[in-house]
Image 1 (cartoon, rainbow, N blue to C red):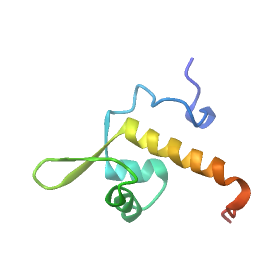
Image 2 (cartoon, helix red, strand yellow):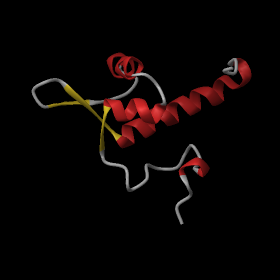
Image 3 (cartoon, rainbow, N blue to C red):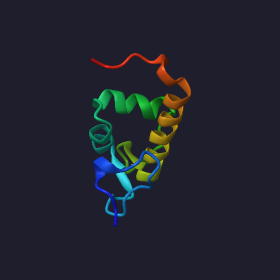
Image 4 (cartoon, rainbow, N blue to C red):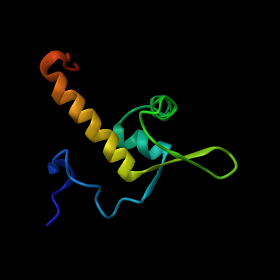
Length: 87
């Protein structure tokens, strides 16, 4: 049985019903960030992507997004309680 999304551990793999490639608006929605923040992630190289089509459209493989999330969890775990909590 696959746990519900809100019950997943941060190390679970990408669920099988998620498409292989995500559009940047999908990435922004999943991470609950703005489109400009999502663009900044790919421009900085923090989030790997592929260009598709002739209009510089961006696609992020779901496994790359999951890998990014895992790196951020590892970074947060390493920093521990040094980070202030959001209000």
